[in-house]
Amino acid sequence: MNLERLRQLQPYLWTLPRTPGEERAEVLLYGGAPLLVSMDDKVLEQIANVASLPGLVGAAMTMPDAHWGYGFPIGGVAAFDAEQGGVISAGGVGFDISCGIRCLRSNLDLEDAVEHFPELGNALFRAIPAGVGEEGEIKLNPEQLDQVMHGGAHWAVQQGYGTAADLDYIEEHGRVAGAIPDNVSELAKKRQRGEMGTLGSGNHYLEVQVVDRIFDPAAALAFGLHEGQILVSIHCGSRGLGHQIGTDYLVLLAKAASRLGIHLPDRELACAPVKSPEGQRYIGAMNAAINCALANRQILTHLTRSVFTEIYPQAALETLFDVSHNTCKAETHQIDGESRLLYVHRKGATRAFGPGHPMLPERYRQVGQPVVIGGSMGTGSYILVGASENPAFASSSHGAGRAMSRHQALARWKGRALVDELAQQGILIHTRSMRGVAEEAPGAYKDVDLVAEATEEAGLARRVAFLRPKVCIKG
Image (cartoon, rainbow, N blue to C red; front, side, top):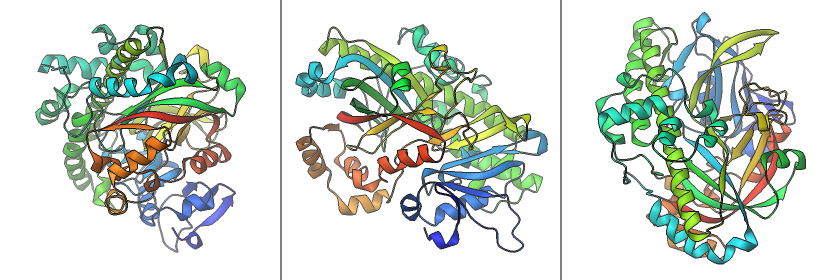
């Protein structure tokens, strides 16, 4: 990205000035200069297009890990007021609806666990289905899948996958209201019936990690973290169901925009007013996919616990928190001293409530919400905590963010060589696709340290702990 096109407002905040006659809202980009330079200029084009959509409140924003996406840039955040004609956009949610990370803390330390990491990796690889179209042992009939889309993680717990104690530490307490399975196509449902309890492909993973460094002792204490502790992060989403919903509704919302005379600067921003029939249909389907993703991560949590207790009989894994990246949620925010209900799109961005928020579990309410920034394969991840005065509708970065395309990565790296190189660094990779490893090479992503630092310096969330990877399961 050419920084000459931007104006710097603060050390970690930039804006894209409007050209004469350009009718759009403000564009804000969070991040330090090195991160913005690494972004494609397409990010600017996409977020400027978002800023022209009806009913936008405040600015259209990008997080420090932003990169080019479909419709919205990944790392894009925008809030809309339904009472002012605000829209909902499938391109502002993404295809993998409610892709997110479930983080588990264990009672194990590295010195107690490291000897059995090879055995642990093999057992997790056998137990956790991962890959394109990969199916698990759970096969759902249509009625059961409807129950999943209504019940989310609650359904999974009722089926014996995990415990009710997990639910307090999941966004929306494990189930979002307003899901309408009837708004989901039969093709989307068909794609999902064998994919519950599976990871998927791409940048999805299950990673065994060790707490390498503590930045904020008070927040770490509240989160139950200490140096040397073993954690597990599970990164996945709504699988085939969410992807098909995204595909189906891009067409429906584009037709709605045309019918209602909404000018789309990019057809990928297909949208409809929140209060329109098409907008309501999409919201019902999207919420069904969110619940599907929450149930999926709950099942994977159960499978992971089963493997850990097989290898480490004394092991206990508690849910630290479960956050989603790709959602639109109705939230109340203070705008010019007034409480307003807004529809906040976060595509490749994480919700990050600050201290005192009533939706946080009691354990974290005084310190703030746990936020997870997942790093690229082999580089490490961060746990942060939501900031009190977050300027971006309580939003934060969600990961390292791609610095090059998968095609570029394939031309530069070989999967087998990467697996061997990481093994020499003490990181064990288990995968069904060496091509997938090459596509997700550490060098294909931004520097996660810079992303976490920029997230903190921009006032979005504070760093709590750095997690170093030890065992990684990928599709």
